[in-house]
Amino acid sequence: MSKTIFSLIMLACSTLSCFGQSIHGSFYIAAVCSDGILIAEDSRGAFVRNGNAIDSKNDISCYFNPVQKVYPISKFAVATTGALNFAPEYNTIFYYLKEFGNHVGQDANFAVAYRDMRKFLSNKYPAKISQFSSLNMIIAGYDDLKPRIAIMNKSHVIGGGYVVSDQKCDFGKVYSEKLTCKEMAPLMEKSILNYARKYHLKHTIGAPIMILKIASDNSFSWMLNKPAMSPQLNLSDLYNDYLAKKLRFKFQSDSDRVNFNKNVKLWFSNH
Picture 1 (cartoon, rainbow, N blue to C red):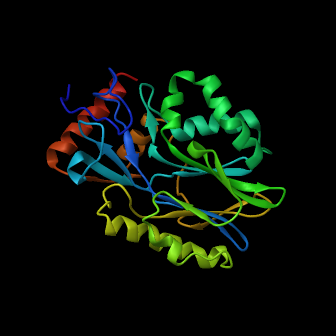
Picture 2 (cartoon, one colour):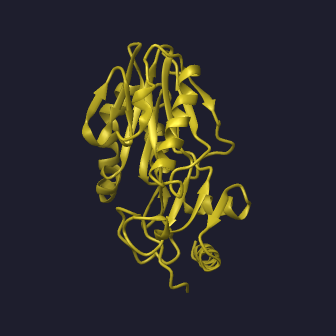
């Protein structure tokens, strides 16, 4: 068994940590435009070495992309930063969001999601509520033709303007609600990439930047870098995509690659 234990910021190691590796990364921007709402997020994930935080590039064993982090569900959309999967089952956040989407049905809009999502997750997965609460999650959509963006862990809703993962991002200098989604999309992409470059975070925030548009009728269209595959529901899905070379991995060292492959093999021998 590999001695390398991969753990994730905000997640405690479990008895499965030696082969159940956890994933971290992300930066989002959500903005109201003249003809819709845009949600932009990078598509890079990173596996963390021993420890509970990413203080530098040396704390991760590898990073990879593209992984989808913006999710259109029913008639609203969700984006998250932080943990992409949760111990000990190592289902991804999309697994739980899909469960919620099935629960509320295909006609559920922003108002339903904002009202019921936290309650649903708390009731169905009470042991994980602290992990859900640690996420930086936003919900976006239209309610009675009015744009809405909610920051879930702050219980804060805006009907105009924008939200970003970190206010140090330069997006505020270029944002205008008068811009169309087509005009805004490349500005969002540039701001995320500039942030990663300026603060030396390209090991956890990277291209391609996926950008989703929500129209006033709560229909969806991808403005930039539409996902080429379905979101992973669990760690097995991600490992299978790795083995099928659908994801581009960058390992920090040969030993990281060897240990990662050992963990993949060990995971499948136990699942």
